[in-house]
Length: 398
Image (cartoon, rainbow, N blue to C red; front, side):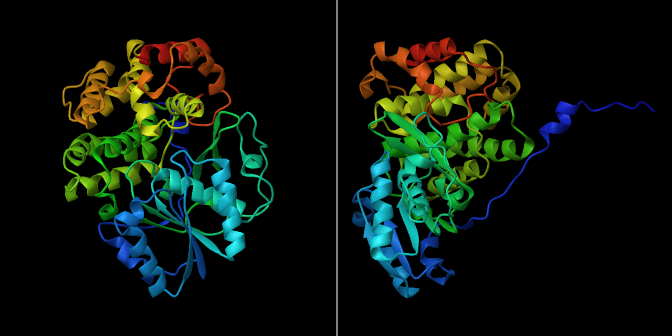
């Protein structure tokens, strides 16, 4: 009998940790079940951004659930689309001033990110930036865990409702940072696709492609393993099939439901690469840039950089097949499928220049990549130099 020794690096691929303590109420209408859950406190700070959750009745529905559960509640409004350190600190003060013992995020990724940081700062001294690992961050470890968090997502894109990560901006330093500590896992999250029916087509596309890129970056990540790839490839399949439908007809319940599922799947094992950092760097200079839009603007240039070098052939072929290209045989098949998907959701004309990004400022971005926390810049299919980053930006710019 021939004995073949398995290389150590192959065995290592199957070593991973998986921990997710979030109780998820998933499905259309599940917000109606919240009152029956064991809620983590007696008085909640409800955190929202704009007026849409009021306009469409989502806030009223949440307040009714809390009233049925005998939980008091206070409203905190005005969180920005790219939430700031000031948003966080104002929210933490509101928790203390009103005697709240838990927080509820009602909104999309920005609202959930900010709310998780509010929960952290409600229990700790100092400023949220003290706990940032970015260039100007304090890099401290919080002394106390965050107060309990409930997330109710109204978008299908970030999956912030099932993870510990938050992205916060500092306008003064032109920085975005990732902040993540284990206590920032939500206690309960509601993924109710009925709350996503009102998202306009443009933002449906941006959010859905964000979920797609969480998954595609995971598949090309050099450290990917079967657990992560399983969630990621299913996400890619669902987005490719259902996002064009959701963009075309926001009332398509089946499409909205599968996009909600894609969003959550991607969040269960998200292994982002420098593609996310490339976009967060752009956003640190242009705070009004919508995250999903920025990812779309740079996607072709990022993935094609590796396709040209045949550096990610196997993972790109897997993704192309998940997108319905049955005879995919090269990375270029994925690039075409990606371009076709971006066109199918009406985003083929997105331009960096339309977001106010000038060609001259691109040269400032590579150095900033090392200060901004987004994805893992060591996990790309090939190591990227500052010159490579600049090439990707220049190829993406128009």
